Amino acid sequence: MFSKNQKSILILALFAGEIMLKSGAEIYRVEDTITRICRACGIHYVECFATTTGIFLSLDGGKEDDNMHTFIKRIQRIRIDLGKISLINKFSRIFTTTDLSVEDGFNRLREINRIKPYNLPLNLLGAFFIGASLCLCFGGGVIDSLVCSCITIVAYLMSIWVGKLQLSPFISIFLSCAACSLMSVIGIEIGILSTLSPVIISSITMFLPGVAITNAARDLLSGDMIAGVSRFAEALINAIAIAGGVSVVLKPWSLARGGFPLDEIIRYPLPLFFLLAFLTTLGFCIQFHVPRRQMLPASIIGAFGFCLYEFLLLELSCSAVFACFMASGLVAVMAEFASRAGRDATTLFIIPGIIPLVPGTGMYTTMAYIMQSDFDKAATTGAATFFMAGGIAVAIVIVASLCRIIMASAANIKALTNKHR
Image (cartoon, one colour):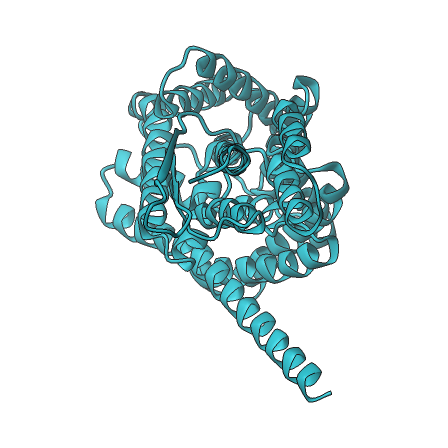
């Protein structure tokens, strides 16, 4: 039979997993954290199964006359909070390696759960960085970037307002992207904007499903097929919402004007591009509540990845798929080093770093070709966009797999060396 203390441990582990899952953690990380906490307290017969919407936890004492206890926790709302994921990671290490009591563990988890994301002014600053920097990266002018930053801020505020109405994320993304398109079109019509595509692409990047793609890849790597497939489905639904929101505005406008205007793209020097990529990643770090001490390395990692992508694409004339794969691989490698140097989760560095690489330009261009009834180009661009997204996932999986192999080999060599001594 289970003691009261063992039941408390079970609830403690479930609470830690709940916080992680609500904060957007990978499924394998949630299951591993729950299992480690239980086994560290002497509960060895534990089975945890998590999905994107719930946690199922059951255990028994391992004897024939023991009763099985099962707990189910439904997860309804997920808000990306990398700071909480980092704190739970550290909590699990402390709890499993020290004599921290269950009661103290509950107190620490409650403190973590009560932590609020960064305040609204700081989040608006992050949205400003994303809109202004990305618009310049994609070839917009200075005035375009300032207007784009305002559009991004308004779209962000709109997404918060729609979220408070408890509507589905699909509706929130659809309406926010439609607002981005509408404000961009108005800017073109009244003469404030000189380019359209860079402004729209930059303002909708905040809603691109980069987190879903990253987590899906890492879940598939760990054998969580259900979670991986469901996250890829989530990414596809979000992409449809983005395309729908943009096209519902641009389609009638393009018909009225007789087509899309040609944008004059500006190319900036690579050092300036690095700074812009740094500010873009910093904006996403703020949006995802990356701890302040990790914002600088995460932003540098994202800047290097984005610059490598731009260099391979423009200077060496490589394909967009190859450039995306190589840039994502660089981000993943640097994230692995940074996570071990700072003893933190790699998610803190990978997610902000790969968001600028998510093919928002390809999604936008595919949608534009569809509205122009050029289905051949739409199919070609859409396929390239799909493979670019796949390249991001594959690069992350390969790097993570190699790192696990290297770490396991190093641990085995160390164990053999100690044995021979």
